[in-house]
Length: 387
Image 1: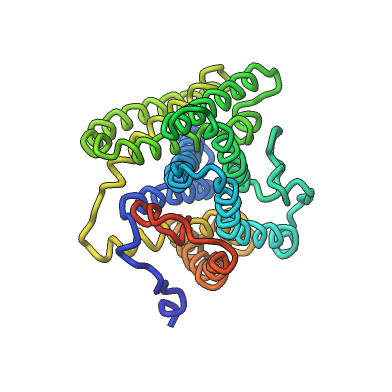
Image 2 (image 1 turned 135 degrees about the horizontal axis):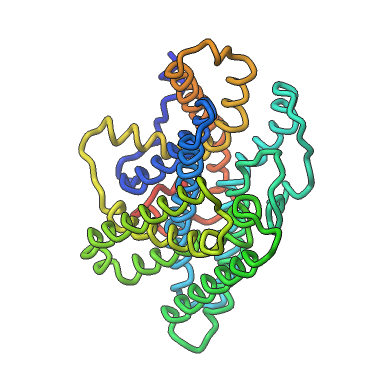
């Protein structure tokens, strides 16, 4: 009965890209593993595990968002009809907001009402949360702390299309103007982080890594590979294995640097600046290989796809509700650790699936009544119901 209640019938194998779904599933699993480490006894190794898995889980989400959204935007801006671009961007914004805002505002309301009452949270709501300004240029507060990454993504959705609208009017080919705008976007956003890194009060975790204006380039590198995928797809396919190898080397290097920083100090100029760039490039290099990944086993396909589809709800529900309810209402100290983890993962999966099926998906489906459907290019590389 429960399986029938949470079973998602909408999964269409022909409309999914398994490799990108796998990458998204890895990202949410890393985030769950990171926050699940709170159940472990404090130790230096736990701190390293917590920082590494949380950091790389979110960075994968950023890169993947840039790649998927970038392909949609590139299709829009590759049109030579300049007069229609503003209307296309407005349509793009509406579709993104139908996809992201309902879940965000649902959990924001729950955090300041039901969750606050259930878990006796001493947190204060501010109007900044309504416009994703809670961590725009300053450290995020403790209400709904996981929302910092959502603010980064929402501001990317707003700012990047505006940048593109400016550069497509240059007296050069559309292909060159898009690349020029993208490069300027990456350079400026990276330069802003360097400026922030020289600030005395800019700490790595609260002052740089989770602040919107310092992290917009992370999604931009996903767009860069979307550009390469759009205009040089054959090249990416040919060298996807080599890029995977180089990307893994860069990721191992990033893990080593971050782990060492956890044991010593993360407050170095490199950690505040180039570590993010190194990580973004390393993860972006994985995209071509994952995009071409296939699987024949139906169980693996549907398991990975299911996790990917409900990952947004998993991200919001595990930290705000599941972990607090385990700490508040379960005798964790007397329970075997493996039982705690089974309950943690199972409860997160079941609740997020219910939220997706009975709230998130119906709300996303409403956008069809108010917006025009975007290019079918998204269907070729990812799920249209996800983005």
